[in-house]
Image (cartoon, rainbow, N blue to C red; front, side, top):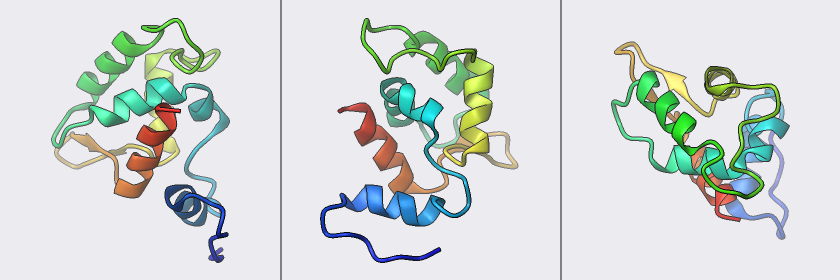
Length: 116
């Protein structure tokens, strides 16, 4: 499960692979296909924010730019994409009904990926 990071790997990318590689959690092809949408949604995530607010933001951002990466993954609606992010560990529901990203380095990685 643990391995040494290669010299040519970016820090966040290597950390993400270490943390998520063996567990199956982390970045999925669907998340990568919607990287700009994902990055923008994660960038605007605020402490104590509820799922309805996050879903609303994803819905407003989806398709807001005429460029690859801003669309919802094929066959998914906002609810499906949100649940996919929870399942993959990008978002976590808390007992107070708020939602957050449990691993700050993973959040930074997703935000950075969206800027490429």
